[in-house]
Length: 263
Image (cartoon, rainbow, N blue to C red):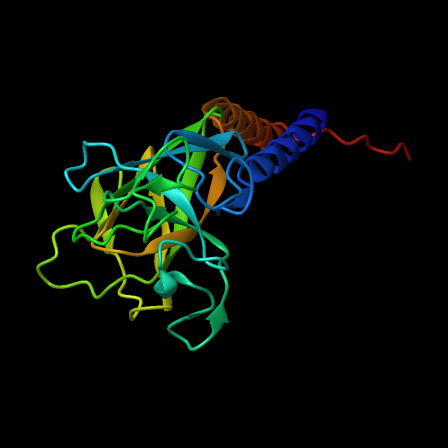
């Protein structure tokens, strides 16, 4: 009886531990907080701490996926580069109005940046951050890393703004996880329009790539972390279950004797 009692306590503790380890935590990448806070800040190579032992580094490439391209912050409340089509507020697909404030763009190659994109060359008439006008525009690459074993990274959704119509023959329009296409960049409906692409909690191991078919911006990449039970915990749980069933079987086969009362 004592064995069963102690085993039950251990089993309850392990189940409780597994439940805690499987807890879910939400995260979001936006561009209103450190390490970037201002229009013109260059994002290439910056690391964002998402919490839970997970970080992400953002880079950008030309459509070839190799040659570097500048990713920078664009302030939709103070649009630059004569870019009024990226000015807040934006109308979403359901008719709601939204103000994303800072968003991430691929800088137009015609207007080169220095240490930042606050002042570009040439400076007139499109000085400052200005999204790429060529089709296709290029790619955003998000590389994730976790310092805690057993952390599962899920991607839920991405917000897009001022994305021009995505044509059937546009080659650069995919959203890829670990190199595999999972969705198409949405058509937001044109100037000052926004749309959210739901990704349904897709799991990724290392990279998220967003191919921009033309001009436009992204913001609010949302997801979750799930801490799965570690192998050691599962092994201990199985051992405890084995002890529990063995003790239960032993007790059934060897019932505790009862004393007879003397008459």
